[in-house]
Image (cartoon, rainbow, N blue to C red; front, side, top):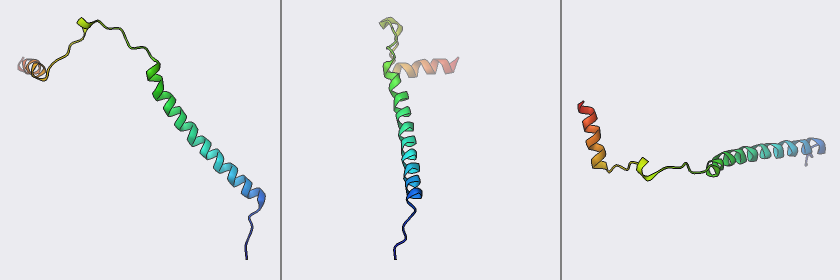
Length: 69
């Protein structure tokens, strides 16, 4: 014998489940929107003379000198 759930309770349960799915989707959208905002900012200006690129050997030498002081 089959017991049928009250249609109002069944509709309420489906509505609650749908609202929970929407909340989860909103959280995901907010996360992605926050992550993507970093790409909308312009790259800061810099001059080639202001950028220092150290090779590992040079960096090790500088760190050794700083440690010996």
